[in-house]
Image (cartoon, one colour):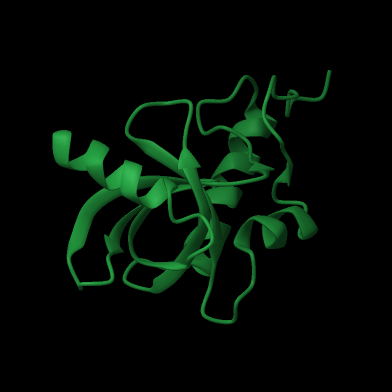
Length: 137
């Protein structure tokens, strides 16, 4: 844990730099686990990364339609950043949950994956605060 905290302090100070990440697996539509590759080729394993500025439905959602949309969002993120691929993260900050960071995520074509999800209506723009419901009420 101590090494992770030092790593996070280092990364948060590097907001303007692109940092390579090897995708380990996708957790849900807006979060994945990756191995961060530092400039000296050291890898920091199993870092949870949440895509900045996007919210996707939750797998443990409040209604069946949210859960269905959440499964599709996870599948779509797996297609955009498949396990084993190397992507880049920028604008790295600590997340509100310990052990996770927030970042803009870019694929090999330099597309912001969060914006792709919003454009495809798989997710919606999110800037923090209380999340809107994904259920039709």
